[in-house]
Image (cartoon, one colour):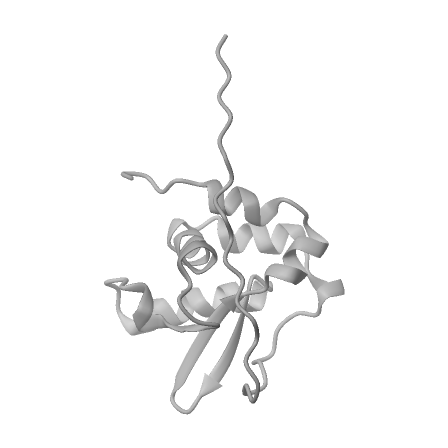
Amino acid sequence: MTSTTRRAAAIKTLAEPEGLPQPLVEPSLDDLRLETVLGALSDPLRLTIVRKLLLESEQFDHPCGWFGIDRPKSSLTHHFKALREAGVTRQRQYGLERRSQVRVDDLNERFPGLLDLVAAWTPEGQ
């Protein structure tokens, strides 16, 4: 029997800039539930969104257009809302645009190792 060790990808964390808008409504740290977080991450598109934020962030938070996902806006809005309501991401409103970031510190505190698994996941076909 052969075993392989997969090395965890480096999760990017960027410093929070000053003067950010308040986050949209989200669960508190104590209200994060594993089954809810896993439910949100069970969708391959949402898992891809979180993985991209963890590994490829270029700035503190990102608008949905940055992800390059070819889906209707209403579909993307649903997926981003599901991630926020589960407590996986934090969203802020910048005028007409919402930007997202992963709640790395909160998720690592509540569910150690979970984000490392997401970062190490390889999407089908890659």
